[in-house]
Image 1 (cartoon, rainbow, N blue to C red):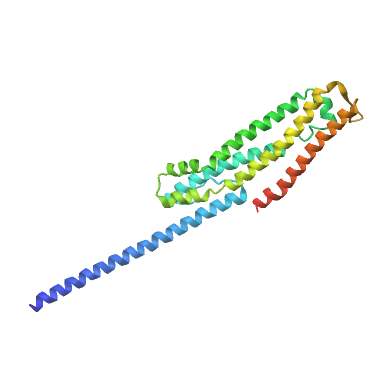
Image 2: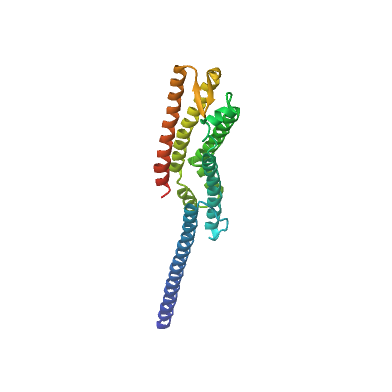
Length: 246
């Protein structure tokens, strides 16, 4: 009888020991998994921060497992995003309209201003394409579809979606385009005015000379509108955009 009791006690002790060991193994595994997740998350954050700082994407994948899939998708997305935003920035920095309202341009390209108006059309087409694409890229529908393509669980899907918080940046781009367009429209108004009155002005001593006082007054008003728009654009660029990149 005692032997049976001792045997049962030993069996219980063995079962308890097994359960305890299993619990310890599960706990250790959980800690290891969490430690690995934290390490991979840290690597991913470091890569994203490098992109934000350098405005360039390193194609090398630094993370592993499902994090690597997230990193690859994020880098592909951000690479296109930077290319599109740089396309707009480069267009503006080239300043292809900077000499549009100079007497030398009036003399060489007037009175029809075919080359200058071609540049204006180029700017508008680039703006339209970039604006449409950037606004599409930050839409919830687009980001959710990209997250679904990863075919990963909610944890990783949320990492992807939460990282791409770029709506405010694109909103600033939209505002920049609007202000730049105001300058472009003003320049176009001046050129159209000169074309419409091509028989009433000429270039003398590197200055625009009008044969009628009322036309000179209208011309000066149109130029002042362009100057005002350019001042507004410069102020926006040196405050809002610079601060957003700090």
